[in-house]
Image 1 (cartoon, rainbow, N blue to C red):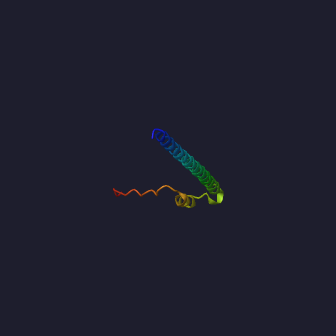
Image 2 (cartoon, helix red, strand yellow; image 1 turned 120 degrees about the vertical axis):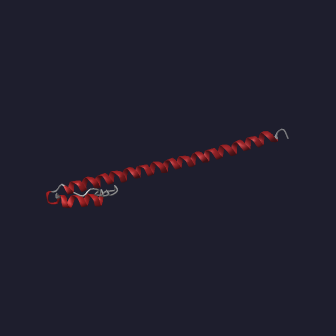
Image 3 (cartoon, rainbow, N blue to C red; image 1 turned 90 degrees about the vertical axis):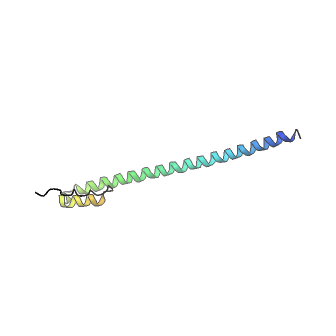
Length: 92
């Protein structure tokens, strides 16, 4: 009986170490996925910046540089919420 206790403890320690190694492997895999998602996000952000750059470059062409055309196009492409009109409180 005295020899069985150290063997049981040794097996328990081996099981726990194996479990911890599996947890570490899974956490490394999760970190890898997080890094991959972050790099994809950076690529999307840079793509978005490039699209904005080319959009502004296109707007600067003389044929399209009229306020009637620029403002609706900017509002259409904008990701910001649309401005709400200020109510007229006083009549002039």
